[in-house]
Length: 484
Image (tube, rainbow, N blue to C red; front, top):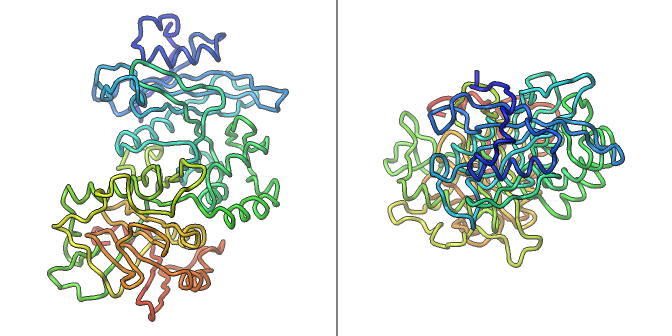
């Protein structure tokens, strides 16, 4: 069990002046909204993270929000975290960087859960969920931003609910606060169904959030999660899929630039006993690893180069004790922060040196490649082709089991080391595949069954001999094996 316990605020709000400035700033914003609840119930880590405890969030405060009947906003519980930002300013958890930038990771999490009739106290399971997400942030050092999504693959409350995934957006009531340790914003977790997550992947998270805001039973203006919701927004209004999502994909493409995935690639250009082989799959031995410097170069390219001013692909959460700690596949929506693009899609980072191959790891041109994905990753290939490459963009799969990365690029992408003359190129375990528009259209026809609702029989193989490309969709167990 997580080291969590419900407690009263213990006079915390009244003693806020005795608290460190980071805590005071969050409490102050909470008091602005909830002046009638000076001592909210809290879930607190028994052993604080900075004393060796497992839970990064010191506290999660829980408030009763009456909503706004005039706007059809339901009564709900409002959860607010303390710990992703710098609460103390003394380097015990976060490096102190001054007040001009972000405080700690720059945000705290919130969650709004519909209050059930007769409920007198807030459920504590959302606090465990928030701790799980916080562990991911601390372990990966990746931050969230509005429009991101996380595929969780389990009811958020461990029930039989259809609400099994999350989108993230700005909290509609809490305003950013300035502290001596930097700025804190508040990101709200929004529970969604699988079909809504998939629509966010295929189009963009902000678009789906806007649709949810327009359907009162699916969240309404304040995006309140109802774990008993049995219908998706597309069940409630079937026209939303065709008139909003499909049209949005056709017009805008997808904003999803990459995912963490169960994937691998194999160089079929030469036999595996070649001692220079640096394929991602090595029979009878461990996959060759990049040097620390090379790994950081590829990580930097993924972090800065996938989209202009984007955030990084979410890597996996390492093994945890509880199911809440680990989604089966963490999927990050890499959101373009600009409203319009001033140049072509590019793999170049803000520092072009970030993707210059290190002299000790040469970039190799390959003649033939074999790509391997699990079923969930495979179902995203049509999205990659239709929503990204046909719009002159790129899409990256980052392995959750190692250094392997597979990036599909279109001919319009700048900074790629794959070219039309040499469409398959590898830099250590990072493979780039350049696909022409004509070939993308052909692949979409051949991969049409991947978008079917019925689960395919695995393993399943697709092959384009004239292009010397093969794709296999394999059971998860293949990727759980040490030899893949």
